[in-house]
Length: 173
Image (tube, rainbow, N blue to C red; front, side, top):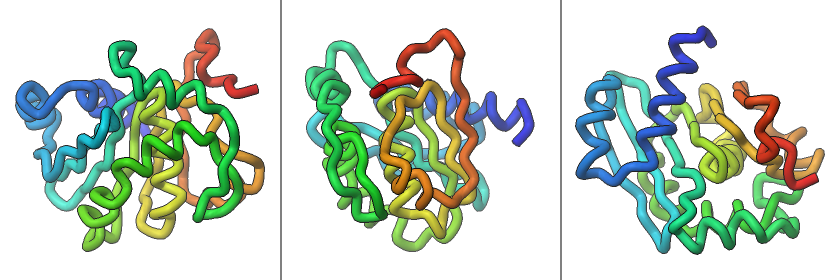
């Protein structure tokens, strides 16, 4: 993936922090239309479309959102249906959205999945569940998500962008 594409995904991940009233125009300027906005008990994400390209993007931690902070702190591991074990809080946040996400992407056979921070962790678990339909997972500042068995099951292409000074990318230890 080239630098221009990574920048586009970074801009999508950044815009995912906004609500549909302000994000629609920004996504449009990035060449994408909102297909669906997901918002369940503090967990949020978007399904976007540009021509024949679909992008599933999850919002990361917002300090004012208590459920995000709680999710980040629930570091115990839980079994993941796609294999292995994953961070309980990240899985819980994705599970809030999962029935809607699963229904929204049911007819889509190729999509990109992205997110930043908590959103990147949610994107990783979502990609593991959608694995055969994932063109690529593109994450920014992602914490560690799962056990080695979980990681081994993630056979799709993954571009993991991190700042070496970002401690979030090294937790949980």
